[in-house]
Length: 99
Figure 1: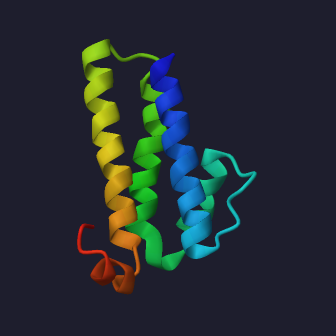
Figure 2 (figure 1 turned 180 degrees about the horizontal axis):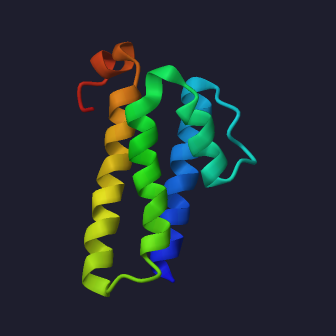
């Protein structure tokens, strides 16, 4: 199923980003374990809620019709992009104005 592949890719990419960006020990953790770990981080409550919604999208795709599925995937893809943009260090943002 392409929807499942998309969510697998999204969660893998965001997990790898968080490992590289914040040195969080997320490799080898399930999506649920990742959410629990992030929930314990005091500065990332909003981030945790966004990721939780994206991960719950994996469950949703099993029951969604194709039109709703596409809309949901696009929404979650935009959320992943926003998470990265919100957490990029300011020096990198200023150096690369295209972000």
